[in-house]
Image (cartoon, rainbow, N blue to C red; front, side, top):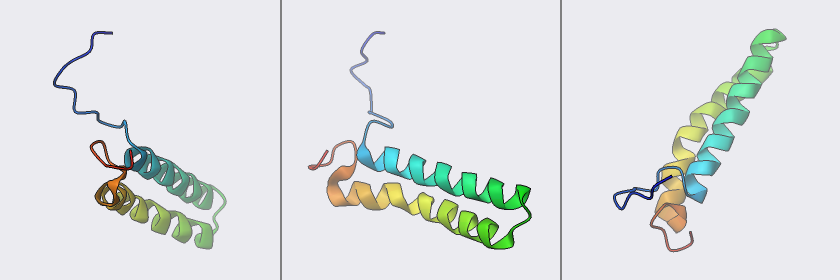
Amino acid sequence: MAHDSNDLGHGHSTAAWSAVIVAILGVTLLTLGVCLPESSITIVGTIVTFISFFVGPVLAKLGYGVAGKKQ
């Protein structure tokens, strides 16, 4: 694979991976809650999935993004 000098590093950061892992966990809980007709698991899965939208940007601002100091 050739290296592109304009590569923005999409997905190559702690912030991005953390957001994806939290989203996968939330969607897994949401799916489990729907399949088992358990409303409490469904609600928790929905909340975790919603939180995942904010995990990446918050961690990026804390320095864990592509150009972050803690990367």
